[in-house]
Every structure is written in structure tokens, then in C-alpha cells.
Length: 257
Image (cartoon, rainbow, N blue to C red; front, side):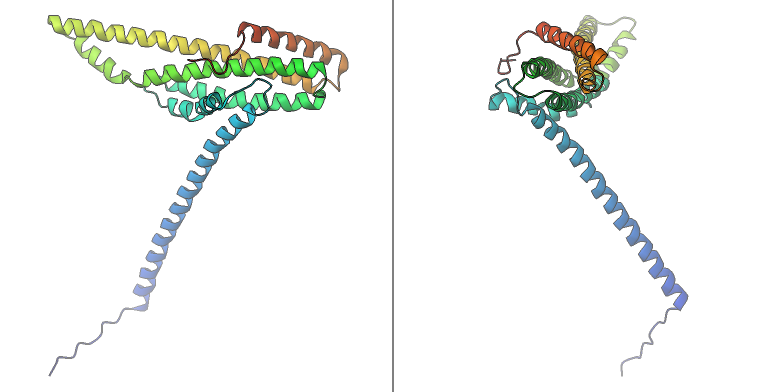
């Protein structure tokens, strides 16, 4: 005869506690998943919005832009986004990416206010548009060069090079090979410093372009409401834009880098 096993009963309080713990854990898991999904969605939206801005800025240009050049310039968005994590040059990468988004946003806004102030058939509209486009495209050209230089900097782990150099410089009597390696590392850091200075120069030029676009935008926005002073400011901003575009010379969008 089989033995009879009596069922184990659980007190109501213990059951309630267990269910409460399970509910709490489930809530944490669900909340965590929602936060992750929302964060991923926002990151994707930010990433895609930058690409959309670039495409919007490149559309409707009076300058002919072929498909290859358009793809190269659109690739600046993910390229400079990745440059923000370049070892030892993170600030330069972040500044370059911020300039790219500000440049696209500023040029789109400049073009919109220009179309509200002048008819596309007016000579003034064409003059302002041409100058703004040249400044915009020249700044993109500088950012393209910046991306290439930052990509080169990313190939070298600067922290490792500096750590290795510090170790060699602490040697009281380095061997011939150690001394040669030390000098080589010093030269590598010197060349890297020159590359970083070159990037800073390109970014400084772009800051000037952003400033001039902003000044022209502000003058155009005030043009109808405050004719006298605003007209003079608009003319001055126009001359500065044209001078800046001349210094950039004629932009060849499909020129080899």
C-alpha cells in the first residue's frame, strides 16, 4: 500500500509576500526594458535627424552636386559622430560634430528666411543664396578634411604611446635600441600634435563661417521691420559673406581629396 503524502500548505501571508516580490521584480524588469527602448529610440532619432538635416541642406543647391559627392558629404555625419571617441582628441571630435549639425541647421534656416524676404527671381535673392552656399560648402569641405585627419589620429593609441614613452624616459642608462625607440615615440607625438593643430585651424575657420551665416540670418530676419539700420546690417553681412566665400575660392564638390 502506497504511503499517503500530505500536501504542504502555505500561510496566506507567505503567499502574498512571494507574489509581491515577484510583482516587484517583474515591474523592475519591465521598467528597465522600457527605459532601454526609449533611450535607444531617442538615440536613433538623434542620429537619423542629423542625416535628415544634411540631406535637407544639400537639397535645392544651385551648385551641381553629383551622387558620389552627395554620398561622401552625407557620410560626414556618422564619420564625425564616431570621431567624438578618438583617443586623446575627443574634444576635437565633439567640436567637429557639433559644428556639422550647427552648420546644417544654420544654413537651412538661412535659406528659409532668405526665401521669405526675397522672391527667387530677384537678383538679391540669387546673390545672397550663392554667397551662403559657397560658405556652407567650403565649411563642409573643411569638415571633410577634419574627418580624414581625425580618422588618422584614431589609428594611434596615444595613451599607450605616452605611457611607453614615460617608461623609456625613466631609464637612467637606456640602451641604443631603447634610446632610438624613445626618440621615435617623441617624433610620433610631435607629428600628432601638428595634426591636431591642423584640425584646430580648420575648426576655427568653420567657427567664422558659422558666425557670418548667423549674422546674415539675423540681418535678413530684421530687414522688413526695421528698414534703415537693418538694411545697412544686411548689406554689411552680405559683403562679409561674399568676402568669406572668395577666400574659400571656388568650391569643387567633386574634387579628389
